[in-house]
Length: 270
Length: 255
Ligand SMILES: Nc1ncnc2c1ncn2[C@@H]1O[C@H](COP(=O)(O)OP(=O)(O)OP(=O)(O)O)[C@@H](O)[C@H]1O
Ligand SMILES: [Mg+2]
Image 1 (cartoon, chains in turn brown, purple):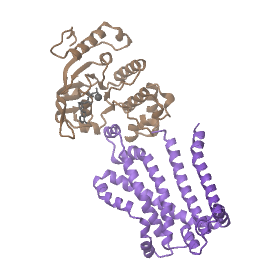
Image 2 (tube, protein in one colour; image 1 turned 90 degrees about the horizontal axis):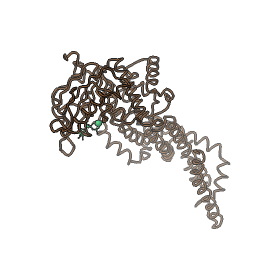
Image 3 (cartoon, protein in one colour; image 1 turned 180 degrees about the vertical axis):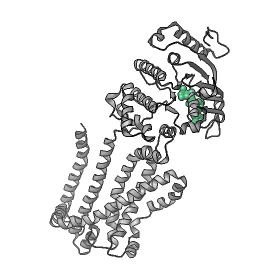
Image 4 (cartoon, chains in turn purple, orange; image 1 turned 135 degrees about the vertical axis):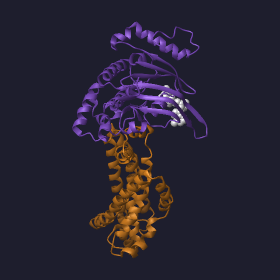
């Protein structure tokens, strides 16, 4: 992949948190990863392995301790200022005094989009997440999964070339989850956006991703990257043998670790 | 549902008040207490209705001073809190000053203000009320501005929002419940300060002055009637600001 076609390049990145008592938490150690434009990459790994941390570094919400990250060839700070990414956090993070519609329109409002264009876009997104009837509700009148859907719509409001999503479907029921996964796939194909997607679900990672990045904790690092080159991503894929093969590959990478894996790992697509 | 809960929470204090007044009347009559010690409730009620229009006029004067103090002190408190929240140094510089304002009885400055602005002006009273309101307004607003959730802070940073946008879209709306609570506390302080400031001089057409001159003229029942007027004025201020608070919080859709 040439550097100019890369959405995100991460090179030898370290992150050390200094705690108030003078201790140190080595959250990320020598992490390198390149995400191509339009590519869908999932991060998977046990709790505390640094998935959210890595995402925050790419979003320029925390500074890296060492190494280098670029987003579309720019520094992370420049990319943030240029609004090159949309982000959905682990918590929905809606503003409680704003209606669902006003929450979705927040980034558009901040960046000076006029009221009519804002409304047009929020109508589209409300339809996408299936919450047209809740446009004028406040967040405290929504279920956890509905809030998360609003947060996802908000992250897509400006049609970013890069989406950073931290367990966005964690609070959804299985039905809605599959529906949102299908929508996300369709959306990415349509807009050609690159996605960095954190999840705890192996089937979800396999269904959505071009590549699945497996991480391990203490210190957080990448232990395996599993390539999945499915020709198409539709409902049939969920029943496909290739899909199950992918699931097995990710599972053994996750449980066995890189070296001492006993089971059938390293399926051809690694 | 909500109506019946409100009625039930109102019932207990009202019942207590009725019992207390009945007991008071009973004791005054039974022991033949002299009016200059404690007048009977019926006596006060009589004096209140008798001089009702004068009490209303006097309440308007004191109420206007309190209102001006509430608005000026309230807005200043919010504005200074916004700057203090943005500039850490400023909040550290202001901390001892605000603490001093909170413990010094501001009304003690009344004679100084009468000397400064002349005995015919209400300005000193309004300033005293404003200072009294400023303290809870500033402290509550600053506290409210600091309640931002980390995820919301991150969100604004990810949007590269300016400080002005973050204040307008995130910090201030988030601080609204705290500001309104400060306003509620400030409303009572405004009335009390404006009233007490009258004890130290200045124009003689307010409620405070009416209380002192009635007492000086040995019209104790009359003095109590004006005190009742002051109580009602304070209750009006408190009731209106509490009403604004309840309305705004309901409208904003929970928290
Ligand atoms: N602000 C912080 N200060 C100190 N330590 C932190 C901070 N943020 C994260 N950490 C530590 O860094 C490590 C990685 O945390 P991170 O939130 O990235 O994990 P994660 O992989 O997202 O976990 P989960 O799946 O539970 O969300 C953890 O050990 C955590 O305690
Ligand atoms: Mg996380």
